[in-house]
Image 1 (cartoon, each protein chain N blue to C red):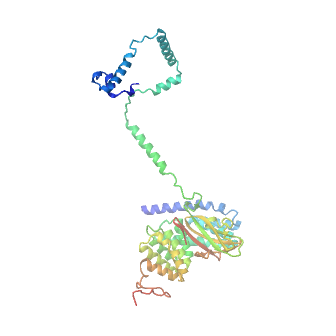
Image 2 (cartoon, each protein chain N blue to C red; image 1 turned 60 degrees about the vertical axis):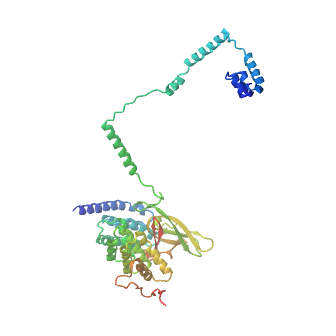
Image 3 (spheres, rainbow over the protein chains, first blue to last red; image 1 turned 180 degrees about the horizontal axis):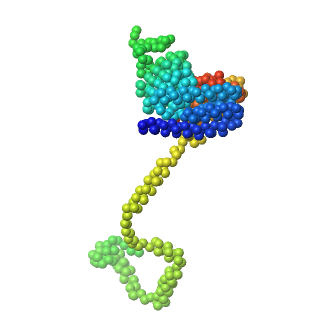
Length: 225
Length: 222
């Protein structure tokens, strides 16, 4: 009962903070977007705040659209789609065991969804992010790996492998850079990620220790003639 | 005058030796020294009465001037005069508790102060955070203007212009970004939005791509 009460307090607190942030939306959009976009985004933001979702990404998306010269209706559609992703991310994060997620975690989840990671995979990523790992950081890293072209399933496996091997959050944060380095050497994102998974703690589940991803040559054994 | 006399002659003058006891070669010197000492006037000195009057007049004048010293001088003298002081310290319990409460209040105030940040001007969502310098580079030969816009500058096309490195076609700038993940794109000649070819990119929701940069306290990571 005590845990539920704390969770409810946190949710109400987040909703209140979101409500205050939503009141600031018209001021932030003034002079940056057209009046119709401002009106529409204000409504979307108020609805998001009422559900405890972060408002700032919605305002940012509207400003971005206007700055890029995108027509108003497309800006509104993009903001509405983002609000939907944030709601989906919130649900996925809760499914992952975080009752009252912070704005950073929800935004990280939305980024992961946008990069092609499914809601179920977002929940799995949150679930494996036990201290010292922060779910927000884990989700951001996964989103970046997916954005680099690493398949979603392989991204999830790589991150899980790193965490279960006891690697630090800093190691996790270095993964996208290592994948990029692998790609720069001629590997595909999948091959680069597989190499990192091997180095983290062995081959993917169900594979032999000397497994290499398809299309990649096994390293030559220098002890063999 | 006596500095040049032999040590035995000096002992003669002090009465420790007699003239007969001196070696023969020192006797002439001894006789001379005894003659000089004997020639000294040993009659009692009589001071004139006028001298005594002059000395006493001077003493009285000094005493009078001392009494007429300014109030400031007297106060200064009083302050500097050492004297014994006796202090009795009696501690009551309420004074101890008042001290403890004052110390606790001071400690609470000290701990409640906001911690200064590395770059005070850098503001990110959720409060003030540390900032890290991030260098942006774009190869855009033939471009007249290049800028970088993103979530860190409210997508302002004019906020962060890049500088050309000679005629090489390479444009660069360095920005202090708050810790967190940011989306951005380059703006070429004020109108063309270009994703960073050296960074991962995601769909921007408008049919284009935004680049991603993750900034940690240790530096920027892709």
